[in-house]
Structure formats: structure tokens, C-alpha cells
Length: 224
Ligand code: C5P
Image (cartoon, rainbow, N blue to C red; front, side, top):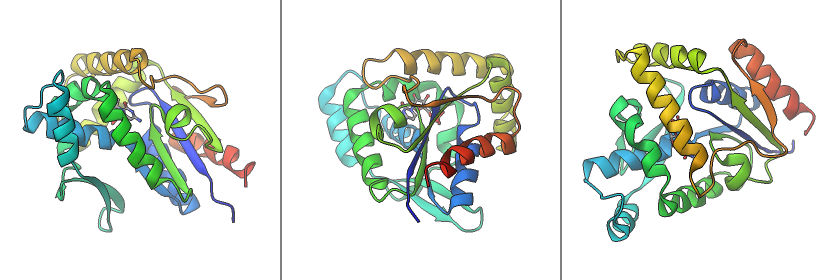
């Protein structure tokens, strides 16, 4: 059967990764969480005190970074590895969330990640979630969905996610972080977060996960 690229873009914490994982599982496609890649780069920059305004340091850091996904059969999910080390849990912590958008603004970082993402999706048969998949990484994706939800809903969902990882963060801190990231992500010069002209808008505020998955799968069916 024909294999396609499914691009799920949108604001922070509106259900992109949960939806993407389930759509990928349903279709037998690979799921690529591009946010995890930017988070892994951010973790490296933080650990190595890379200056975000020093192009030489940034280039050297990017040359030393290897970001890969490996499937964890126990947890039935892809996990992200930074230079051979599993950083799946570390990259979700607030100190990384608080820096990731500043790192993601840097054009050299974006170029390196986009090139790697394009390689990962070359054979198609992938669901990729992020901010610029339908506009910059795979502008020719057969199915593009742009997801949004109101900020209170997103804040509460994020808190539940963090609690599941035993991270207790108050709602104000989470809301501030989401809004700050949305602002930086949508106003940066290189591949800002925006809805592609041919993307379907999906507001998940009042939707269940099953409804979100069905919405995407219906658009996929019409392409196969
Ligand atoms: O998807 P997630 O919320 O984990 O993404 C973390 C951050 O990574 C985003 O807020 C954004 O700054 C950056 N990002 C990006 N482009 C992508 C995916 C994520 O700039 N394709």
C-alpha cells in the first residue's frame, strides 16, 4: 500500500504527540517526535554551557551531537538518545522546557534538525509532530493537521503529563512556559510555527484522544 507522510503541527501541549503515536501505531508507521530532538540539543547546550550567541561554539556543539531514536519494547515507544545515552526522561523536565525555544530559534540548529528529519522520513510511512513539519520539513506531506486548544486546557493536560512523570509543577509555571514557547516559536525568523495553507485545523479543546485520532485517520484514508 502507498506510504505517506503525516505532519502534525501546532501549539505546545495540545495533544500532538499522543495523537501522533496512536495514528502511527494504527497505520504501522514510524512516529518521530521532532520536539524531542530540539530538547536533546538543548540538553547538550545546557550541559556544555554552549553560548547561544557564539556561532563557533554552536557549530562545534552541533558537530558533536548525535540524536537518535531507539524503540523500547518494554514501554512500547521510541525513546530519544543523545550521544548514545537515553535522555527520554531528562529532556521533559522544566529546566529544558524553559530553554528549548531559545535554542530552537538558532538557524544552524534548525538546519541540522530539519536535514535529519528529512532523512528519517525519506522512505515515507511516518507520522511526524512538531512546529514546522508541514511548512518546512515536509511541505509535500500528504496529510497536514494543525492542532490547537485553549490555553487552560493545555496547561492542565501538561500538568497531568508531568505528574505522571512524578514532576510536581504548578499551573502558573506551566502556563507561562507554554505561552512563552508559543510566542517565541511563532515569531522566530526561520520556519516559525504557523498553519500551512493546506493543513486541516483541529481544535482539541473539547475532544477526546479517540476523536483526535479519528480526525487524522479520516484524512489519511482519503489519501490512500
Ligand atoms: O513538541 P515539544 O513541545 O516537545 O517541543 C519543544 C520545543 O521544540 C518547542 O516549543 C519548539 O521551540 C521546538 N520545536 C521546534 N520545531 C519542531 C519541534 C519542536 O522548534 N519541529
